[in-house]
Length: 268
Image: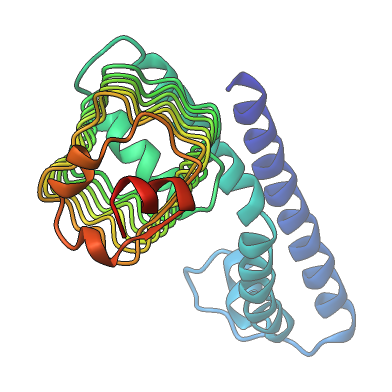
Protein backbone atom coordinates (compact mmCIF):
# COMPACT_ATOMS: atom_id res chain seq x y z
CA UNK A 1 0.00 0.00 0.00
CA UNK A 2 2.86 2.40 0.89
CA UNK A 3 4.51 1.76 -2.48
CA UNK A 4 1.23 2.49 -4.29
CA UNK A 5 0.86 5.83 -2.47
CA UNK A 6 4.45 6.77 -3.25
CA UNK A 7 3.97 5.82 -6.89
CA UNK A 8 0.78 7.92 -7.12
CA UNK A 9 2.40 10.98 -5.47
CA UNK A 10 5.39 10.65 -7.79
CA UNK A 11 3.14 10.61 -10.85
CA UNK A 12 1.16 13.63 -9.63
CA UNK A 13 4.38 15.59 -8.94
CA UNK A 14 5.81 14.69 -12.35
CA UNK A 15 2.57 15.68 -14.10
CA UNK A 16 2.38 19.07 -12.31
CA UNK A 17 6.07 19.82 -12.94
CA UNK A 18 5.75 18.86 -16.59
CA UNK A 19 2.63 21.01 -17.01
CA UNK A 20 4.32 24.09 -15.44
CA UNK A 21 7.44 23.66 -17.60
CA UNK A 22 5.36 23.26 -20.76
CA UNK A 23 3.28 26.34 -19.90
CA UNK A 24 6.43 28.40 -19.29
CA UNK A 25 7.97 27.34 -22.61
CA UNK A 26 4.77 28.22 -24.50
CA UNK A 27 4.52 31.66 -22.85
CA UNK A 28 8.18 32.42 -23.57
CA UNK A 29 7.78 31.45 -27.23
CA UNK A 30 4.63 33.56 -27.57
CA UNK A 31 6.23 36.55 -25.84
CA UNK A 32 9.13 36.45 -28.31
CA UNK A 33 7.34 35.64 -31.55
CA UNK A 34 3.70 36.49 -30.85
CA UNK A 35 1.92 39.80 -31.06
CA UNK A 36 1.14 42.10 -28.16
CA UNK A 37 -1.69 40.95 -25.92
CA UNK A 38 -4.46 43.11 -24.55
CA UNK A 39 -4.54 42.95 -20.78
CA UNK A 40 -7.03 44.40 -18.33
CA UNK A 41 -5.83 47.26 -16.18
CA UNK A 42 -5.90 45.39 -12.88
CA UNK A 43 -4.97 42.01 -14.33
CA UNK A 44 -1.66 40.38 -13.43
CA UNK A 45 0.75 39.93 -16.33
CA UNK A 46 1.01 36.17 -16.00
CA UNK A 47 -2.77 35.74 -15.89
CA UNK A 48 -3.13 37.92 -18.95
CA UNK A 49 -0.56 35.87 -20.86
CA UNK A 50 -2.32 32.64 -19.98
CA UNK A 51 -5.79 33.99 -20.88
CA UNK A 52 -4.71 35.37 -24.23
CA UNK A 53 -2.49 32.43 -25.21
CA UNK A 54 -3.65 30.61 -28.33
CA UNK A 55 -1.15 27.79 -27.97
CA UNK A 56 -2.24 27.09 -24.41
CA UNK A 57 -5.82 26.68 -25.59
CA UNK A 58 -4.67 24.08 -28.10
CA UNK A 59 -2.51 22.32 -25.51
CA UNK A 60 -5.47 22.22 -23.09
CA UNK A 61 -7.53 20.23 -25.59
CA UNK A 62 -4.56 17.95 -26.26
CA UNK A 63 -4.00 17.41 -22.53
CA UNK A 64 -7.56 16.13 -22.16
CA UNK A 65 -6.86 13.49 -24.81
CA UNK A 66 -3.61 12.56 -23.05
CA UNK A 67 -5.46 12.23 -19.72
CA UNK A 68 -8.03 9.92 -21.30
CA UNK A 69 -5.24 7.83 -22.83
CA UNK A 70 -3.43 7.56 -19.49
CA UNK A 71 -6.68 6.58 -17.78
CA UNK A 72 -7.12 3.58 -20.08
CA UNK A 73 -3.39 2.82 -19.99
CA UNK A 74 -3.50 2.40 -16.21
CA UNK A 75 -6.72 0.32 -16.19
CA UNK A 76 -4.84 -3.02 -15.74
CA UNK A 77 -2.96 -1.57 -12.76
CA UNK A 78 -6.22 -0.39 -11.17
CA UNK A 79 -7.85 -3.79 -11.79
CA UNK A 80 -4.86 -5.54 -10.25
CA UNK A 81 -5.11 -3.34 -7.16
CA UNK A 82 -8.87 -3.95 -6.91
CA UNK A 83 -8.34 -7.73 -7.12
CA UNK A 84 -5.65 -7.55 -4.46
CA UNK A 85 -8.03 -5.69 -2.14
CA UNK A 86 -10.80 -8.21 -2.85
CA UNK A 87 -8.54 -11.12 -1.88
CA UNK A 88 -7.52 -9.27 1.29
CA UNK A 89 -11.20 -8.95 2.17
CA UNK A 90 -11.77 -12.67 1.58
CA UNK A 91 -8.72 -13.65 3.65
CA UNK A 92 -9.70 -11.35 6.52
CA UNK A 93 -13.14 -13.00 6.68
CA UNK A 94 -11.65 -16.49 7.15
CA UNK A 95 -13.29 -18.18 10.11
CA UNK A 96 -16.35 -15.92 9.98
CA UNK A 97 -19.60 -17.57 8.95
CA UNK A 98 -21.22 -14.39 7.65
CA UNK A 99 -19.41 -11.60 5.82
CA UNK A 100 -21.14 -9.41 3.25
CA UNK A 101 -17.77 -7.99 2.19
CA UNK A 102 -16.47 -11.49 1.36
CA UNK A 103 -19.73 -12.31 -0.43
CA UNK A 104 -19.40 -9.22 -2.66
CA UNK A 105 -15.65 -9.67 -3.17
CA UNK A 106 -16.14 -13.20 -4.49
CA UNK A 107 -18.80 -12.04 -6.93
CA UNK A 108 -16.65 -9.12 -8.09
CA UNK A 109 -13.63 -11.35 -8.71
CA UNK A 110 -15.73 -13.82 -10.66
CA UNK A 111 -17.27 -11.04 -12.76
CA UNK A 112 -13.71 -10.04 -13.69
CA UNK A 113 -12.99 -13.68 -14.67
CA UNK A 114 -10.47 -14.13 -11.83
CA UNK A 115 -9.91 -17.78 -10.90
CA UNK A 116 -11.21 -18.79 -7.46
CA UNK A 117 -9.39 -22.11 -7.60
CA UNK A 118 -8.35 -23.31 -4.17
CA UNK A 119 -10.72 -20.95 -2.33
CA UNK A 120 -10.73 -21.81 1.37
CA UNK A 121 -14.00 -20.77 3.03
CA UNK A 122 -15.35 -23.62 5.18
CA UNK A 123 -18.68 -23.06 6.97
CA UNK A 124 -19.19 -19.72 5.19
CA UNK A 125 -22.66 -18.32 4.53
CA UNK A 126 -22.79 -17.78 0.76
CA UNK A 127 -26.51 -18.26 0.35
CA UNK A 128 -27.76 -16.93 -3.00
CA UNK A 129 -24.32 -15.97 -4.31
CA UNK A 130 -23.83 -15.66 -8.07
CA UNK A 131 -20.68 -17.53 -9.12
CA UNK A 132 -21.85 -18.63 -12.54
CA UNK A 133 -18.94 -19.92 -14.61
CA UNK A 134 -16.53 -19.63 -11.68
CA UNK A 135 -13.34 -21.68 -11.45
CA UNK A 136 -13.71 -23.25 -8.00
CA UNK A 137 -11.57 -26.28 -8.67
CA UNK A 138 -9.86 -27.66 -5.55
CA UNK A 139 -11.90 -25.27 -3.38
CA UNK A 140 -12.46 -26.17 0.28
CA UNK A 141 -16.15 -25.42 0.85
CA UNK A 142 -17.09 -28.02 3.43
CA UNK A 143 -20.19 -27.05 5.38
CA UNK A 144 -20.78 -23.90 3.33
CA UNK A 145 -24.34 -22.63 2.81
CA UNK A 146 -24.67 -22.34 -0.97
CA UNK A 147 -28.43 -22.74 -1.05
CA UNK A 148 -30.10 -20.83 -3.89
CA UNK A 149 -26.63 -20.04 -5.31
CA UNK A 150 -26.00 -19.73 -9.04
CA UNK A 151 -23.15 -22.08 -9.90
CA UNK A 152 -24.16 -22.88 -13.46
CA UNK A 153 -21.20 -23.79 -15.70
CA UNK A 154 -18.90 -23.59 -12.65
CA UNK A 155 -15.81 -25.79 -12.36
CA UNK A 156 -15.99 -27.57 -8.99
CA UNK A 157 -13.72 -30.46 -9.89
CA UNK A 158 -11.74 -31.83 -6.92
CA UNK A 159 -13.67 -29.47 -4.60
CA UNK A 160 -14.40 -30.44 -0.98
CA UNK A 161 -18.17 -30.08 -0.58
CA UNK A 162 -18.63 -32.38 2.39
CA UNK A 163 -21.92 -31.56 4.18
CA UNK A 164 -22.32 -28.47 2.00
CA UNK A 165 -25.83 -27.08 1.63
CA UNK A 166 -26.62 -26.79 -2.10
CA UNK A 167 -30.37 -27.01 -1.84
CA UNK A 168 -32.21 -25.12 -4.59
CA UNK A 169 -28.86 -24.17 -6.12
CA UNK A 170 -28.40 -23.92 -9.88
CA UNK A 171 -25.50 -26.15 -10.91
CA UNK A 172 -26.62 -26.81 -14.47
CA UNK A 173 -23.71 -27.74 -16.76
CA UNK A 174 -21.27 -27.63 -13.83
CA UNK A 175 -18.22 -29.89 -13.51
CA UNK A 176 -18.11 -31.91 -10.28
CA UNK A 177 -15.59 -34.51 -11.38
CA UNK A 178 -13.86 -36.15 -8.39
CA UNK A 179 -15.54 -33.66 -6.05
CA UNK A 180 -16.34 -34.84 -2.51
CA UNK A 181 -20.09 -34.40 -2.02
CA UNK A 182 -20.46 -36.86 0.82
CA UNK A 183 -23.52 -36.02 2.95
CA UNK A 184 -24.08 -32.83 0.95
CA UNK A 185 -27.61 -31.46 0.66
CA UNK A 186 -28.77 -31.07 -2.96
CA UNK A 187 -32.52 -31.00 -2.34
CA UNK A 188 -34.35 -29.50 -5.34
CA UNK A 189 -31.05 -28.43 -6.91
CA UNK A 190 -30.81 -27.99 -10.67
CA UNK A 191 -28.16 -30.50 -11.71
CA UNK A 192 -28.97 -30.64 -15.41
CA UNK A 193 -26.08 -32.02 -17.48
CA UNK A 194 -23.67 -32.07 -14.51
CA UNK A 195 -20.53 -34.22 -14.78
CA UNK A 196 -20.20 -36.31 -11.60
CA UNK A 197 -17.47 -38.68 -12.84
CA UNK A 198 -15.35 -39.92 -9.93
CA UNK A 199 -17.29 -37.91 -7.34
CA UNK A 200 -17.85 -39.15 -3.79
CA UNK A 201 -21.63 -39.32 -3.28
CA UNK A 202 -21.82 -41.24 -0.02
CA UNK A 203 -24.92 -40.04 1.83
CA UNK A 204 -25.65 -37.28 -0.70
CA UNK A 205 -29.25 -36.04 -0.64
CA UNK A 206 -30.73 -35.64 -4.16
CA UNK A 207 -34.38 -35.41 -3.08
CA UNK A 208 -36.45 -33.73 -5.84
CA UNK A 209 -33.27 -32.65 -7.64
CA UNK A 210 -33.21 -32.28 -11.41
CA UNK A 211 -30.62 -34.81 -12.59
CA UNK A 212 -31.68 -34.79 -16.23
CA UNK A 213 -28.76 -35.57 -18.58
CA UNK A 214 -26.34 -35.74 -15.64
CA UNK A 215 -23.46 -38.22 -15.94
CA UNK A 216 -22.54 -40.58 -13.10
CA UNK A 217 -19.44 -42.62 -13.74
CA UNK A 218 -17.33 -44.47 -11.19
CA UNK A 219 -19.17 -42.99 -8.20
CA UNK A 220 -20.23 -44.42 -4.84
CA UNK A 221 -23.97 -44.06 -4.10
CA UNK A 222 -23.86 -45.66 -0.64
CA UNK A 223 -26.59 -44.12 1.59
CA UNK A 224 -27.44 -41.51 -1.05
CA UNK A 225 -31.08 -40.52 -1.56
CA UNK A 226 -32.73 -40.19 -4.99
CA UNK A 227 -36.33 -39.86 -3.85
CA UNK A 228 -38.39 -37.96 -6.46
CA UNK A 229 -35.24 -36.90 -8.31
CA UNK A 230 -35.70 -36.43 -12.06
CA UNK A 231 -33.65 -39.01 -13.98
CA UNK A 232 -34.58 -38.22 -17.58
CA UNK A 233 -31.63 -39.22 -19.81
CA UNK A 234 -29.42 -39.48 -16.72
CA UNK A 235 -26.38 -41.73 -17.33
CA UNK A 236 -25.17 -44.36 -14.84
CA UNK A 237 -21.98 -46.22 -15.73
CA UNK A 238 -19.71 -48.14 -13.40
CA UNK A 239 -21.44 -46.87 -10.26
CA UNK A 240 -21.12 -48.58 -6.88
CA UNK A 241 -23.62 -49.33 -4.12
CA UNK A 242 -26.64 -48.12 -6.07
CA UNK A 243 -29.63 -50.35 -5.36
CA UNK A 244 -32.74 -50.79 -7.47
CA UNK A 245 -34.75 -49.47 -4.51
CA UNK A 246 -32.81 -46.22 -4.60
CA UNK A 247 -33.34 -45.86 -8.34
CA UNK A 248 -37.06 -46.67 -8.26
CA UNK A 249 -37.70 -43.95 -5.70
CA UNK A 250 -36.78 -41.44 -8.38
CA UNK A 251 -38.99 -40.05 -11.14
CA UNK A 252 -38.47 -40.94 -14.81
CA UNK A 253 -36.09 -43.69 -13.74
CA UNK A 254 -37.06 -45.81 -16.75
CA UNK A 255 -35.88 -43.00 -19.02
CA UNK A 256 -32.37 -43.03 -17.58
CA UNK A 257 -29.42 -44.67 -19.35
CA UNK A 258 -27.79 -47.57 -17.48
CA UNK A 259 -24.82 -49.86 -17.95
CA UNK A 260 -25.38 -53.58 -18.36
CA UNK A 261 -25.07 -54.39 -14.64
CA UNK A 262 -27.81 -51.92 -13.70
CA UNK A 263 -30.03 -52.97 -16.60
CA UNK A 264 -29.95 -56.52 -15.30
CA UNK A 265 -30.56 -55.38 -11.74
CA UNK A 266 -33.64 -53.40 -12.89
CA UNK A 267 -34.83 -56.13 -15.27
CA UNK A 268 -34.79 -53.66 -18.15
